[in-house]
Length: 529
Image (tube, rainbow, N blue to C red; front, side, top):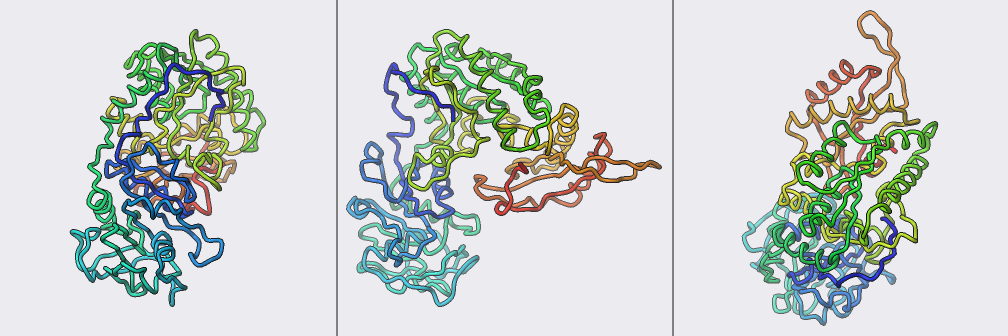
């Protein structure tokens, strides 16, 4: 994130997220906490993910309609297990506990939790025992996804069991009078087919949220907030070619027009045709003031003979900052910097609580000098990636840009293993284009989180015609994910992989072998470097 000491601003802008019905998710360290928040957002209801020990002061100003306690890795009976703060139970709001959250609710309200006779991980069938608002519309038996070792042995006073599974006598419990519900399973994961219905019953049925968190409302309220914050001052925005900065720029331009100047530092490390698309979309089609800095030579000179991935990132970041600073200083009356910061960035940066990890180096562009005092305009800081795409579509950005797969900050430099050269980049771009073309033509592009080619630093022996070859091996990477925290390799059809391999070997000179990466995350990462 660009380090920009804020100077006095023209007005205190109202956050476009505030004023909407809100569900608060308290994070107890579960791997699906962020996914719960995304699922609530999919119901057109604003949701904030906050640390478990947050004070009640943090939610003042939010129109909170309900609270969700997330899963977590602990056992609630451990002495150091995190507990829900007292204000949760004193708020009078409906509360939904999921997995650890359910056990925590039972533990704090007088129930009994202990080690399960058998652990329950994976698919399970749940049988309904009674009717409850949370289970409206669900059949008498339905499939869920379990992930727990402990189990509830006795419900707290005032609670009733509403469903059971083979290993969980209290798979669903509730105190209808207080609006407290507990689920031993995970409704937020796709492996619970009716999970979205259960969350809808809680958010809309129990909590009474009407679903006003829409792309149209967000755009209108963001425009108002941006104008109040910026006034008549100038704003600069660094375009990268990715969807986040593109949508942020389009939204700010909708608000303040020619007060915005975009700086596109073309580092020569983008995919085929991306630089041209950025210039065409923003300068010619959207008529945004755009400074196009063609800097391929400068970046490649900084990468000469560099093979360490982290050194690549640092040099690319430093070069970007130097060039961006040079162009930004030439823009008169620029008092604000627009960034495409997303809600996961805010959470990961540690600003939402103890123990959060910091963002990886390549997610940031570096820090501008301390004497370059710019206020930050971050119109997307409350959004997840899927919401950003909906905003981009509503703003009229081209589909190819809105639905482009995520792309790392250092670009192709970390998909070109070893030293980065112009020749190797050209080989990689051609191979990558084949991957993109074939996956799009086969109809899989929207179903995949990321897909790309990697030019390895391995050369292998091959035979083409009557000649022996010694060329690069190209790796294909395609993963499915919800938010890239975890990912699995995409089960692409063998026929599609065969077409990709055949085309790369035949059309990309210097490559004679193609392999497919089938490593999930974890233990691997999505990118190779």
